[in-house]
Length: 330
Ligand code: AMP
Ligand code: TRP
Image (cartoon, rainbow, N blue to C red; front, side, top):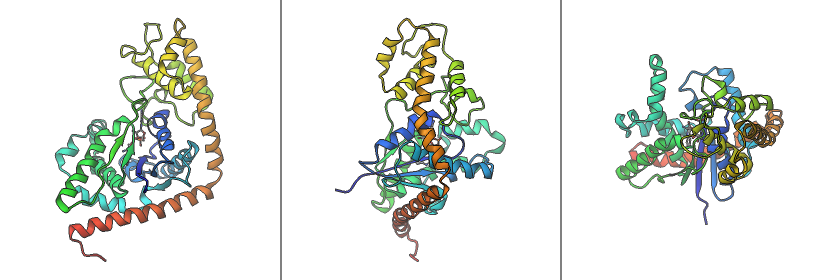
């Protein structure tokens, strides 16, 4: 039987956080055996905010190395860089002609970004979700593992697939989001009301996958909790709830047993232990990453082979689309 397909992407717009790891990367790993997986580094998306070219180059390779260091095996999954496969931009144009302005206007991520950069609102920020839909639909993906913040974008991808299929006959698979119930939204350590983001101005808000142990200790020590002083898992203590989620992921212990374990024990000791669990959990990833950044040839080999396979698979879909629209085959 043919394996189902999985597609997901991460932007090389900053160093990755434990939010990216818990909400996305970690889940990518477990899908590799059962599905034909495509994991993309979405550099075209990243330039919707200004990037320094030298940094973008480095971060693109960093994301590739972190994909592999987190356990994604290039022998099993296809790893590639979005700009290496022109079909993504090409399909994006086509899909933009069947996307309604109103749909894009309603995207919360756009609205938030628009608020932040009112003076320099570029059209790419607005059409960003159309490019994302193209990424997914080109590979006929069945499932898209993402964090909770991408749910609305995925709805658009489904909607565009259905609209195109209705207009031109069955062409695209309608993809399903794969959002893990747990850890899909890791919050800022400084403001548990907003998500942990690598583009946060306050570096104490996030933990990076490549943070050293002193930095992790310091950031967790400074993480916002509350004045209740008891370890419980509830919405009234959002900071603590977030820390318990992180603890649970890195220790593989469920939240309930953690709450029991820390019953009557103060936040100080809890945070100390949490730091240790996170540091230990990230250690193998960091070691593998260091090894990989010294093997540039290997990384190049991976992304070149990945692009070849991705171009082949996406090319088939794009040709079909062009034909159905009425473009003359070349
Ligand atoms: P991005 O960094 O925006 O390219 O996101 C890459 C992936 O990480 C997407 O699937 C996001 O949904 C996921 N992600 C980003 N931040 C978080 C977070 N704080 N909690 C959970 N998942 C996240
Ligand atoms: N928009 C996603 C994010 O910011 C990244 C992304 C781009 C993506 N294309 C994708 C995720 C396709 C899943 C599938 O997190």
